[in-house]
Amino acid sequence: MRRSRLTFAALAATAALVFSHVALAAGGGGYVEHSGVNTRDVAAAQRGAKIFVNYCLSCHSASYMRYNRLAEDLGLSEEMVMQNLMFSDAKIGDTMDIAMPAAKAEEWFGKAPPDLSLIARSRGVDWLYSYMKGFYRDETGGWNNLLLPNAAMPHVLWQLQGIQEPLYHTVHGEDVIEKLVLVEPGEQTEDEYAHTVRDLVTFLDYLSEPSKLKRKSVGIWVMLFLAFFAFLTYLLKAEYWRDVH
Image 1 (cartoon, one colour):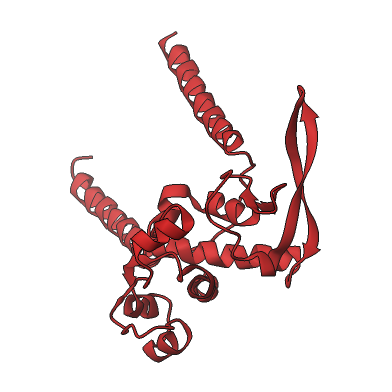
Image 2 (spheres, rainbow, N blue to C red):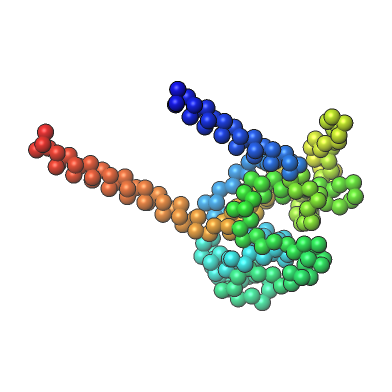
């Protein structure tokens, strides 16, 4: 009986956790898609770094990351980073900061754009992926977002994705967005844009925990060592207990 109660309690807790995530996604106004991000895909992280510095770094800093660390982790030479990822007078050992003062940013945008060093750990890669695909033009002619309604951030990748507009349907007398419809194509197809966003989120995931790349590669060797050590321990135990039996 006690085991049954524990099992029921565990199932109830799991269900509550699942429904709380569903409610959170619904409360944000949109469905969170699975991103398929693989942080070990270094090529994707390299492409994402290029997207980041071209479209994000003018407003959003990544002040916990240094350019030379970026070069080392992503298999790039310092010369490649300086030529392709640095567009200011920053030095290779500097952090990825922006020149825009926070006070001016708040005056221009209503809120200073946040530092993105830890955004993937804060929001999650699936949320970020869905957020960057969820921009649409609303009835005011401005930008809005399914996951973060009335966000201050404009759609910086709109030229790539194109312009989406919402298609509404009525639920209990209230207009609800059913889906987004592409009304003006961008420079990329839907699949190409999805790959672009995935690359960007892959870089943001790396950015939030740079040691993840090395930790996972080292972890494999650690597990192999432990398995080998466990085998030696078993042989030693068998040798000690041979005379006892």
